[in-house]
Length: 243
Image (cartoon, rainbow, N blue to C red; front, side):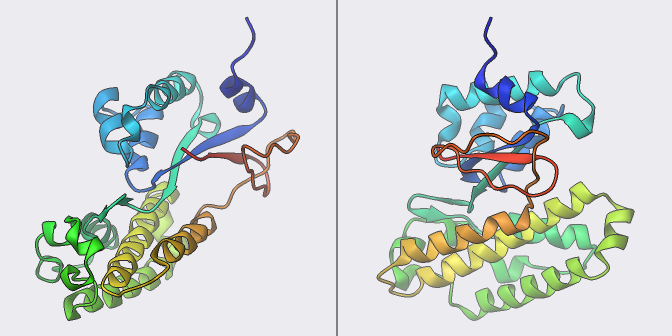
């Protein structure tokens, strides 16, 4: 029986698959495909944004990755990533989850609840669609942005020691949450302004994401294909697919 395209890519040395979906929620999928707890239905629903978890192709992909990884050592397992901001088509969530995760990783005694307020005031559609209803330019939001910037600086201070005390994976997860939280704060701040090219500003922020996750060159080079843009560095690679 001919090998599936996914198996061929894995055989060629690819170790990551990336879809255009919320990169923070996608961590839940990555945990599952690497042997973590959870039911496929729950993870598909919670791990994808834009209801992409309802697509059978995406559910099959998760199940295949989990089965593929089952008998492999960690260094040979496939990883799953998202590369979109934690937003939906007409809404953007509160930065609470992202900022509190980073705060807890850094071990800070920092009460963010008063500054964040109720999640609904961030996530409601009006907060993105009507600048007058947005809280992205309030003094509280500005203070959150300053604290998040400080946390990012602290995260990178003595990063090697922090990684040694926890793990590289945990440090990267904290950075993913924190940079996503900063992105949400910028997103909400821009939502408070009347911009003619709001989507363009969003696209520019998305373009920064690959800098957070260096990609690596596979053992064998592939013929370039237009439908699957690939970036190479070092020893393995990530396949990026637009949903």
